[in-house]
Image (tube, rainbow, N blue to C red; front, side, top):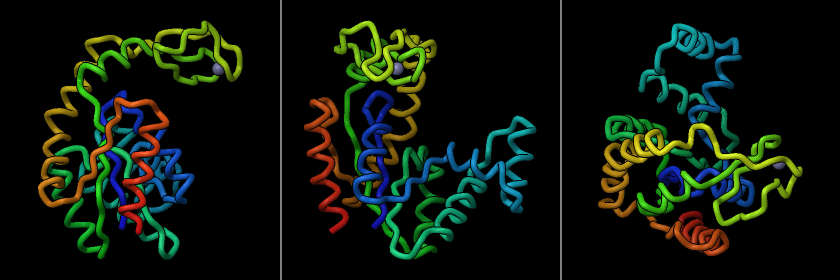
Amino acid sequence: MDIILFGMQGSGKGTQGKLIAQRHNLSVFETGAELRKLAQDDSELGQKIKAIIEAGNLVPNEVVMEIIENFMHKLPEGSTVLFDGIPRKMEQAETFDTLMTRLGRDFKGILIEISEEVAMQRLTTRRICEKCKEVYPAKYEALSCEKCGGTLVTRQDDNADAIKTRITAYTDETMPVIKKYESKGKIIRVNGEQDIQEVDTELEKALKQILS
Ligand SMILES: [Zn+2]
């Protein structure tokens, strides 16, 4: 059983995803990372992606599906995949479902749920270390990074308008996908507004249920 991790910006999905992937030895599929890796590749698919990126075009959905299929074929026997942030839209979900069926794989989704208000609040008040790029929530009050001592600054892309746009895209495009999967009993919701340790505990429970 593979896993899709869903969560709005600010839900902690990125951090939590890395954590559970390490702990459970999951193979993470993240579209951006996979694109960058393949664009360096001499393979036919790699060259195709390189050409699309160099032309400044968005990678079309059918190519994204090809990338997923390529990724799945290279997996070691018995691997569990953690899809990070994909499928993003209804159209993509339909092709994704078709592909998974063809590959003979099933999946469940975990949604780290936070409200738009909490997302806005977290994203507009977090700070980042100038040196090592570690991200700190507003409640971390110190002025310097606990890892490297660097200065903490507000992220440049963290302005309210840009954040609002990303949140709206998630609510309008990704939430319908989550609801569709939920209606088929494929979604486990985790409360992302708790302390990070409590989120982690709930996530582990969800994973246990999916992986057993
Ligand atoms: Zn730092």
